[in-house]
Length: 471
Image 1 (cartoon, rainbow, N blue to C red):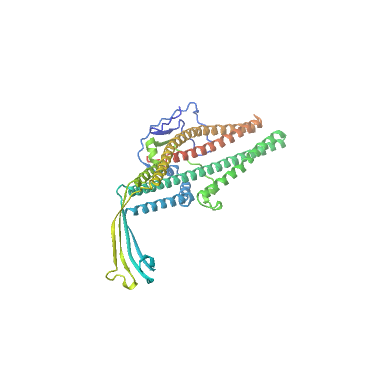
Image 2 (cartoon, rainbow, N blue to C red):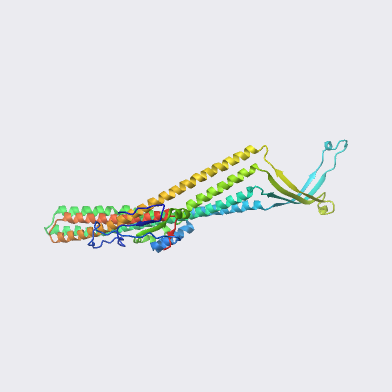
């Protein structure tokens, strides 16, 4: 029976079939068949600690690891997320400055002349007067009701959200690089299968031509063999196009031009080995590891604090202020006796006729809080759904891969036997061609199945928040 998954408890993906071969080269069929193959049994490992690097080490592909490291340094989406984090931290520091007094230096020079109308009985114009003012103004809001403190804490929550968002972008970039890399390797493997099949089919064509020349064959056999060869050759341009497209996509993810890719991508390589069992922990652990969920929670916390800060504007605001300095009629007189000034005292403000504006600001903050709450709920539901779908997809893809490996082994043996019987004159060419078509299709299906399972593993990595259990 296939493994079942429960997001509410510890989860393991168990394949009911033994591991598939490391490569795609056909092997000799085993004596056991799929129907009689014994089921494997694995216990669920209780996992408590997780690492973001174990996934790459488990894959064991140094080229992929280097590509991911380069993408984290050069990818434009990562740069955007980092810039947002820098801005969030600056906003937090700016809000924190409201907790300390504001001190402003003042230096001014003015020339004024009073109007005769200001002094009753004055019969002549007052002379012009020049004033020099040097000093400072200081003010400090006493945060009685916590308005400023809530703003600071809200900005701190937004910083945490930006940090988690950066982690989420890094995970997404890692997943995209891995997915494109696996699809590139899969296309390269399919191309190799097609070329190997074409070489074998060329030998069949040559054999039929030799038999026709010796009077032991027919033109029908020759043309039929050529038809199979041409159909195989016709599949190579599409595969070459797919390889080029995946290289271009990797170039974009790495921030490189298509012609400046690492040399390792220009050569074919096998797809990596895939684990038989995945340990991802419980739903509670998943929620604590998914950066998008944690980012949504921090955004909700920030909006909740901003609602409290907006409501605090209904209450009185106490500000302590002071002004000190010197005022003189000439620059040389500044600092002399009689030119000093000093004002200090509290200031209490209350929005009497401005309550409407305060109310609307509270409504705006409340609406943002409701939006953040809905986004958090949607993120949690999406996380659980993605994880369940990714685990199920990988489980079935892994099980299918083992069956395809047996199919390739059986097809290879059947093709070899058909060709031996044809060369001995015991059968006609149609059986050979049919066996070759079956082998080519089985090998293609195996490569595509391996690619599907590898990309499904990437989906699991992304679904569990980019972490992998330390075992």
